[in-house]
Length: 437
Image 1 (tube, rainbow, N blue to C red):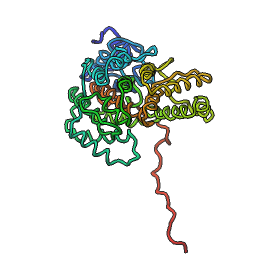
Image 2: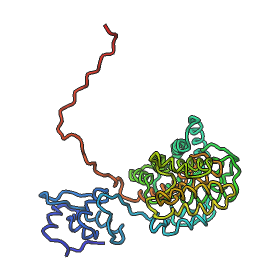
Image 3: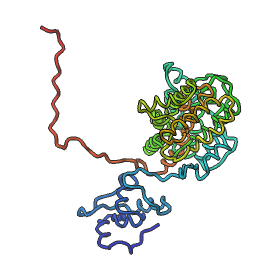
Image 4: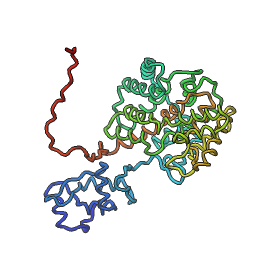
């Protein structure tokens, strides 16, 4: 795409170019080329998608023509730009609209119903479906991760273990700085099973050739896995692999923008995921659901939450007006699990009881809670599933970000401190702590 010289005033363009070799565009020319309003051009600058330079004489800003044309090519078509102040990235991974979500244009719930986690991960990464794909952990990385995890205190949670495991696996991978798509995918395919293999075993360990869900199961429960329960876990891993720019994914993209290696990208995602408003939300739903089962009904438990001003966990999602489609799939599969009936009934009771106060639908955290309660898993099991699964999405977004201009996510702070220049501060006098006279 090239700029038509018929647009804009000649004198304004001459001032913008300022005699330099690189052709520069005015704000108006840039807005016309991108098909946006002039104020949106400055929103692109604030988000790091464009760089600007002051025009000679201080008459507005100018923009590098090649950079603007590159942005226009990546846009592909002219679409309404995000509102000024919104943070938005073009991505080809996940689309969420009309209470559904799609991985590379394919309904994600259908993918999860027909394929396992590894196959869905490959689809997200490459756009190719590879039935029967299995991930394997290199012995050196797995041994390093296990030794590091074993050194943690006994009270450490699963996310603690995953964070140190990914650091140990990174140290064991001398090729981690290879940011080519081939290198990143090789790291990802070995990193995910290494994280799973580093977690302590509660039950009978699976073989290396088994599906990742089968290898994860004994790290979550000491019960023998039946086919129906494994199907729920595999579907949960596939469904949670990505969900557009959630908070942890944004952190992962920021790390990738600085060209951090894939292990560091995953570490950034794990750090954000641990928050109670993100990956740890399923643990709150687990504790609530366990209490509902124990007390024989949701009414007193929901009443306790409302009385103390706490939201009822596992309900509502800002991106879905109706029921979370991920929860729909998992609830249908959980209905086939023999031991899940009491927890499923408790979940339905929570939704029905809360609906008397406010009409909120079940989200995926409530479905994960049904799985963990029904299968004798700890409260943090849902968070573990979430972390392992979302690693695939973080890698997919890293692959996209590595192809973008580095360090483009550099917002400007709005300074609210004292106006400069302030006098040089003087050291505060410390009270003497010697013996009293």
